[in-house]
Length: 273
Image 1 (cartoon, rainbow, N blue to C red):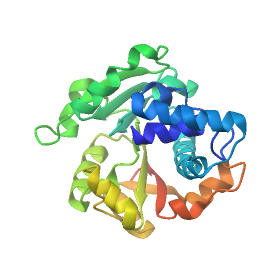
Image 2 (cartoon, rainbow, N blue to C red):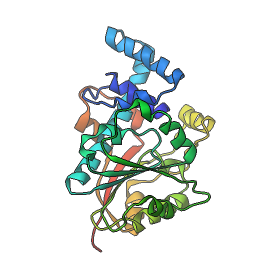
Image 3 (spheres, rainbow, N blue to C red):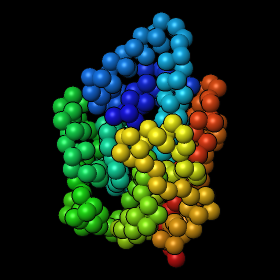
């Protein structure tokens, strides 16, 4: 819900990524988060600055930049002919409803059944999906990703674009490598894997907040360590970039990149061995 809120704040214009749009984000907000959004939206429309708006803008910048960077990698994969997209830990992701590039693409949204139930309760408020969406509920304590995707109709013989956004930092290294092995086993030559990861552990208030939310950060990687893990699974890094790179590519105003200095996105491809 917090992630959807940050995308919604960016969507109403409270970020330095001026052309960022995600109208799906608002739809998923509960009443509490929607009230917060409406206050921010009023301030944006009035042109009135405040401490609250400034704080919201920092978070919105980070989320809009992260989203735009991943969207671009997805678009590139689809342009190359990839017709399957798997979103690992999809949460309240709205790409299948907002990205015109996904027309004709089959999107598999993988997540815990309880999380998917929350999301699906809001779908009647969205326009029809652009992509063909298949929900893949997985309780990893009882079922493997490989089994769940095979059951859902994912074709491991065709190239797949994988999005792993906002997830691996909450997994142990062993859990990440186990899931990565599953991803590799279902990735035909020409597949693309997009991973959002952190280079440092969260500290201070941010770390405390994550613990209170029940999602403490557990792992970090250097760019070299992430490349090594991907290479061991059969992927070669095509691009690895941080928030300053994202800002140069997509920001249209000054961004406090220090707020996201630990965040990176790596795009890797399954190439012939």
